[in-house]
Image (tube, rainbow, N blue to C red; front, side, top):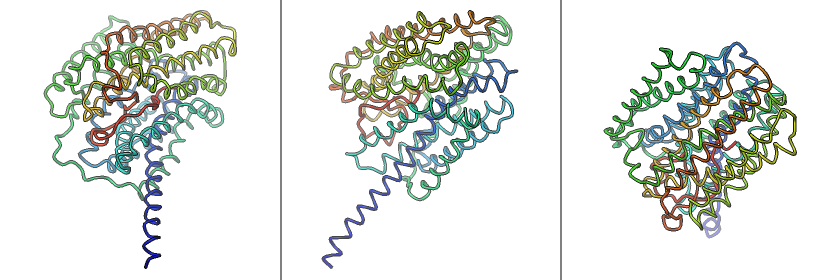
Length: 502
């Protein structure tokens, strides 16, 4: 009996460790798919343009902006739905919907079905990510939660860092459809393992119903605004369709704000904006994301169109940037923990804008990767690493710990909205050039726009409160995929990397 007493606790502990590792694998695969998919779609865009040559770039841009609009609109509501119905149920629903969207994209014979598939993917990702983090944190004791969040975020960072190169290899070898089909085996592994190991706490039946109508109003307003911006050069700024889209954006946006001020579980909790730091950080995020997402797609388009690189070469060419982001984010978080958010952010914005100005002034029609492109990419990556994770942490630094999750989800929404607007502006700036010189000038203007957005974000961040992480209890971290219940007892950690930092 003595031997049994000595052995059984060890065996039980071994089983618990194995189960927790399996849960981490399943939940991390969810973050990996969403992050990898974003990077690959940017790399796949030139191939989409060749396949659907009859469709305009403004139409094809909905492959990116549609995903961002749906994901950003649904993120907060998806987290609250997981609280009501159970995170395990919402996780598997999100996994199934994301997989269905990937399949639709992979078999799409036209742009309409491709965009529809991306909208479905955005719906699935919005359900998948917050529920996966809730399941992960529910599997670990309080003292290990911060560590596991950092590892979970690191998986997303790994997908971002490897996305351009992996995507380029897949697309070169198997075509752009492989960028979507690659999700299918990953989802199958997550489903098979998850069915065995995932457990969900009892759903919170007493919680109010999330504001699903608010999601429709927000998505409609953003969709109308993006449509107006991206199609105005073709349809005319004073055309009835564009004017109607702008009016619809204003009316739906106003209705959304009114509803958010009255609903018990709003998509956008307006009371959060009573904090100056929260308001400033989210405005800075919106502006920054406009330039950031425009630059991400613009760089791939430049390399493949002006320099004439293959998708494989272009994917490899942009890879050093996210690698620098992954290396810098952790130290940047620790530095902000010592000296505060504002100085780190201001330096980061200057560095990021400097790299973009380098692009605009130095890059020409001649292929100069090692002497011109690579130095600019490294500087831009350094700037991103100093800004995006710290900006996300600053957004929640003034909030009560119980509101970290919803606050960071709102910040992620601001990021996705900014990204959708930035891609729409890209379409306008690049236009339809008729000569190589016009094409090059368009990219110079695009990099100038991205730099202006970075400078604007820096100016806004001057008005950040003087809050210091050491005093607020918030260390810099990107907590954008959190949900209310799962993180209310968890403390942010430094070192996470934004999922879009490609």
